[in-house]
Amino acid sequence: MADARGQKRRAGLRLWLPALWLGALVLAALLAPWIAPKDPLAQDLFLGRLPPFWAVGAEPGYYLGTDSLGRDVLSRILHGARIALVVALVAGTLTCLIGASLGLLAGFLRGWTDLVISRLIDIWMAFPPVLFSILLIAVLGPGLDSIIIAIVVIDWTRFARVVRAEAMAQGAMDYVASAQVAGRGRISTMLVEILPNVLPTIVVLLTLEMGIAVIVEAILSFVNLSISTDDPTWGGMIAEGRTSIHQAWWVIVFPLITLFLTVLSFSQLGEGLKDRFDPVLR
Amino acid sequence: MPDLYQISDLQLSLPDRTRKPLLGPSPRIEILKGLSFNVAKGEVLGVVGGSGSGKSTLGRAMVRLAEPTGGSIHFDGQDISHLSEAALRPLRGRFQMIFQDPMSSLNPRHRVGQLIAAPLQVQGVEGAQTRAMEALDQVGLPADFARRYPQELSGGQRQRVGIARAIALRPDFILADEIVSGLDMSSQAQVLNLLAGLVRDLGLTLAFISHDLSVVRRLCNRVIVLHQGVIVENAPTDQVFAAPQAAYTRALLDAIPLPDPDQVWV
Image (cartoon, rainbow over all chains, first blue to last red; front, top):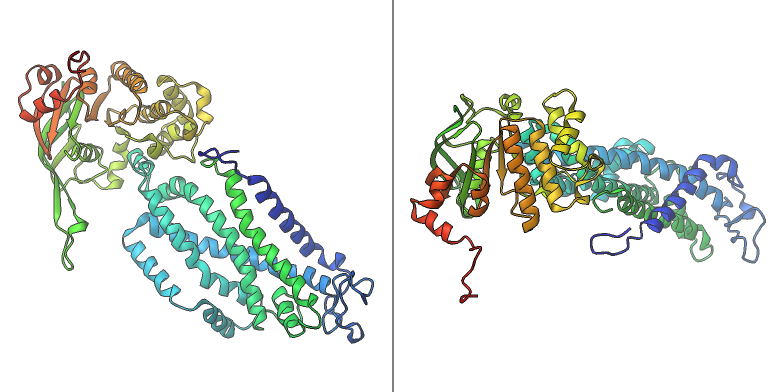
């Protein structure tokens, strides 16, 4: 595969490595109760801060060590994948649907629709996002639903702005005039002509947003505003690991690596999908 | 022959946003300053003028991509100057347009077959797919091109797709806006030959916008010369080339490169 300048597009690795990691993560999340070596909630104070399997003093069965309460780090990461993925998929998709629809309408219909939506975006973006989300969770009460709502309410502008600009650029193309000459209505033109051209951008944004959703969930867990503190979440593990970072680095490092790889995979998956399936680039 | 288009005192002005004062409306630029002419059925009309003369705007007004600000456009006896988009829709199938830049006018996400069939489906024509394949054949493209994307085609082939899309609806009138200006000389000749053949076979009424008089000479029965939004010449093609009336037309004619240049000059 080569683009117009003859440069090789390395779509292969960019698509398959993230897909592999995320696929493994989905499997881990689905099968967590069966493949997790230990109960993620079981505490055993005699087995606190066990190091990972290769270090001196490791206990068999606790592959990535335990935290200060003696809970198995690997099992908690596997179970934490469930919440991370649910948040990524649900919050990412909802944010995308709302933001992209508003952006598409504003960018293509212009006029007062654009005026209203654009001012709404401006006002929305003037709120500091972290404070906004903390405020929202405080009002809604902690829980999975609240996190998803907070992400959607805060992040739709990210889609709306980019999709609006893209729809505006596409709206100036002659194929839109051509659809008008054929007698196609405005909304139909928007969906049939413009949307397919904006879709690659939306897919990239969607996967980015899934990564962001995972991070936001982690941040909210970090400030103790996510799910109940018992449920294993990556953010919660990082927050707990912070207090014992000098004595037991593994408690914070393994969830961090998982989080990092997941967010990176989501963003690279978007680019990889675009390279692979976009007929214009192909 | 009866007139398909009757255009009288057509004016079109657009707001000039670059000179908008802080308060109040933008000043308007007059692009078309009162044009009157008719297009007879079966006629091939050349619209010639330099850049900025208003020829593209005139074309856009004729297919109602733009709304006139004064005067009237009658299509087949019906005043279409200020019809709403909804009221225009049933008429849309009767006047079609071929665009200058097929890269921009052919949606890169749609295959050639879809591109040609789309206007037929929008207008509710039965057997859209069959008609689209027919049109593809009429412009001399093989049937398997229907599955290709426009960016996989050459410039000349793309413009053929543009022509196929316009003729598929079997319209009464086609506007061709500078359709060969983006092509190399040999593709230009092929596309023009194709268009000339289609005009003859289908009995099309055509308005051909161009800045190139030699192209217009090949194709058109009658020529309108536009200069700064005003018609300076409106006459049969032979007459325009043999005895141009306006000074601007003579200047345009002098600008045509000679097929047999002066050996000394070269």
